[in-house]
Image (cartoon, rainbow, N blue to C red):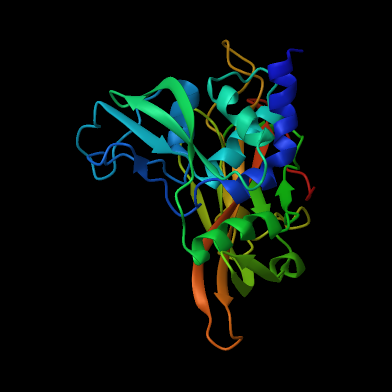
Length: 304
């Protein structure tokens, strides 16, 4: 294994450090080209385009500018690092930029930018000094590093193969969903109490034939193996959060897994006096899910 590969994989362990030292999670502004209207979107369209070489569409329609630098968000960087950890075959010029960023001191804030030429990522990436940000934005960044990973129930369980067309359930128990984070953080000389709670989550399959994002309010409804209703009937019930794969893995030259994600959305707020609370917006917390998909019949299993 090369030094570059070993270091890139090790960089995954510094994901929290990256989240605290790169661009804000609320947007990804174009830098270095004031006429640019393209941006990296939180739902993963740009990440997919980076990996597949697909066209990166500009915001609001119209033609993409010929050349523009786009700043990746905390969420996209976290996604990339997790993908590296799960897929040892992943290779991209981005690794040459992510590695120096991971090795940088925490105080050396920097943004990762990618260059888009004629609407496509052209393989060029760079580190630039992070612009000065207001205290709320810095607090939002640091909140990402304090949010706990919420254990979820999935059916079929993670690690088990799933069947094309069959619903995959994702949910959280009421106890887990009641999790609240309440911390004191300091940013730019401002000491604030910051709190957050989960309000919803999104699920993406990673199937190249299905780029949709399933958005779920609340904790979702688990699959009940003791219910006589079929999995598909249960999937249509209020509160159920399900998705289905459209194509199998490991056949016709396809990779052996699809890499999707579950993103928990945390609503955060902050105060300096304990009385007046101000919004920090919604903070995404991404976890990557690798799935093998077959066309064979199998039974839906209980939570795992």
